[in-house]
Image (cartoon, rainbow, N blue to C red):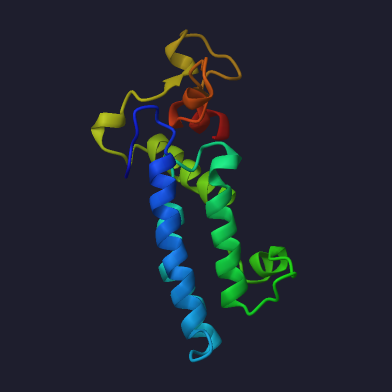
Length: 167
């Protein structure tokens, strides 16, 4: 993880995009020598770890994540031998692959599931405020997690704000 002073995650996104570019180059050079199922497994091995560890930087402006999205689409085009002008939407759907935005949502949902079921370390025990912590009487939303009030977009992208809204 590369963290800068303003928490924009630009350095981390740049580092990930360099690695994904190298992996795209590897895929494009060996795609003619491997069978399709091996190439699919190699694609999953080379790309998904970089894209799935983005719970921090994945919740960000779409303009900052555009480079990662383009590299992911390029990898899909290389893996499934799509022409340059072809859309990758069908390839994502037909091969049950998640796009970058859905990978981020999945990671946030997984974090919230683990928090709700107390599967996280004790450090996270009081990480979110639940409605029943505000008052003792029962209301319809007393068991919902309360997102923090965010004054800036950087705070809005944090797991403390985006997690309860998603869950």
